[in-house]
Image 1 (tube, rainbow, N blue to C red):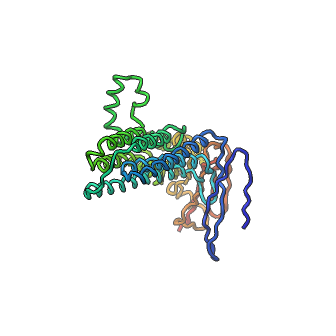
Image 2: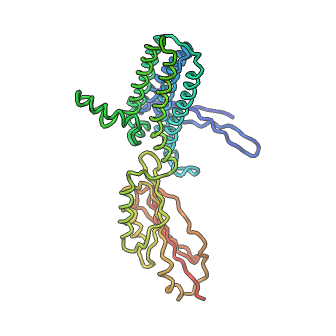
Image 3: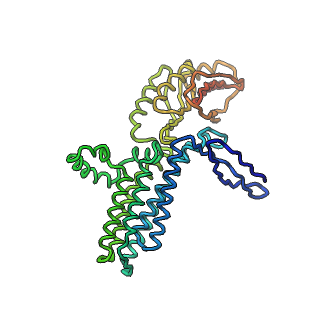
Length: 411
């Protein structure tokens, strides 16, 4: 197998290995992912990732010298910051275009990257809680003051601040803003209001709530400094400080994991429930619409909503007009929408009984069409088939209308 790499201006090709299984065995193929250096956000994310990588190396070396748990926790926080920046590179590099295997392309890749990063930090916190309890119970770990505690706190704080503010519009920033407040942020809110009452200029940073990663950086610095001061007199201070910091990490990561996990589970964000219900109610009042059924709406990624809905209409209603009006009502909330028009069976029973047509299988489900964008709804086409039922399709970039005329045989 020959592998040829082309030189691309202002781009860096990164190789990804994919395992393909065939009847004759497995073989490897190399797939290129192009990172565009012309994008300033990608450059900033890569530079930040390099700085976080250096902080990780320094903290790992400090842990090997001091055998300190608090520096181990600081190293894990730097790892979290590193992968947060990597998720930014992924979100700006992977293609969003639909394919045969992936209907929505890799639009959910940034969500999965942030979810995996937060879960990694949560598991690290659980591991550190376990190790801290073991050190407290064993009572045989005696450490000594070392300047590496101070430098370790600085390294961890720098990496966390880079992850929080280093790159604009990165996925982790959206998650930090959109997710619910952690219990730490809620307790720190009272302190923030008191500080801003004395120093109003800090309200830009501290209000309405302090950034979760900045709060972790502050707690890590305090824990490392306290450990450095009291480690010679209190042998258990390293384990206790690590235990407290690990609990804080767990409490901080839980809302972030919950927010991204709900997106991956295709749920609807709570804050748009009322708006979505209002749009559905307005669509239900359109002339000719009998009901909206089998509606499913979910959050595709951090900024996009997708959904499908079946619209049952009267037999004498205009399918194209109903499709356009329903799409207009729901497109205010749902960016990618699939609307399937189904003509009512009951109202057309007497009319169809007077005609002579072949029997139709009522148990046969209607054909469901994949969705494309709503942005170019003007382009539409319709066609009909003579297989004892009529189909009308309205093709609008990511919205398809589909109608069925069902004929019954009188007995």
